[in-house]
Length: 348
Image 1: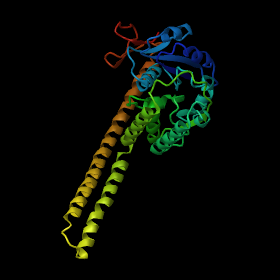
Image 2: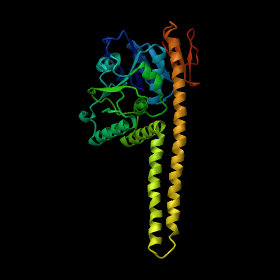
Image 3: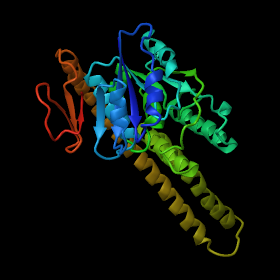
Image 4: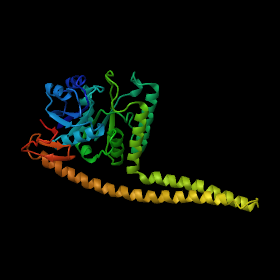
């Protein structure tokens, strides 16, 4: 059993040593623990500090690509190098790395494909009351969209099985947290959570400027992911809404005509016709969106098969970490015998 602990970093030279020093060296049921640092365009000594602490696996971005892309590239690298479990933590030492052993146990026991740490946000001192309410509300919305019962959907301290890493496809640019839960829920992957306590706050979040931006970005990611997997539910409900509202002007027209009220009441017919047209368009868009969903599902299944072939070929090749990611061309390349000078991301 091989566990990759990936740490997305952006200028974390101060806090990264705290993270690296607290990662467990042994875990029950695990043969090998590998630390992977994802340098997302840092301008400080993040990479040098990681090397000084014994890290030999890196994914490097020439410029800041965002948390979602860093997560995706880290998972890709880990799977290419034989990971059975991928653990994601943060470089700001927010999460208790000594809990990694407990985090991966449900996967090792075969009880879950994804394990998400519950930060117990109601107990976090530096969270304002408003932020705590928004965290609970956001988790509730995600659970509704995914069919899950997770208490802390925004937590980035997670463990993914190899199968989950292959089957999940991150497309958002903001954060993978909400999207992967909704994907996993709709793909029927088993998800569970364990309670943890967070460390002292070391800095402000760099993912968003304020809570309003965080709410907007998270809400957009949730809506996008929900539309991807349940489009007909949205457009069908919208169509029913317009249908019900659209019938009211017609009923009004019939009542007025039946009571011989003065006027021709053409405005009721016009408004009703517009609303019923909106209803028809909503149902039509829902059908098209659902067909698109089916087509995307088939494409994802084909992509899963290609990933399995690619990762299986790599894991069975007997090569040790000779993988290069070329982010200039945005293509992942395997270079078992040489390291091209154009590559910015590499295994050391």
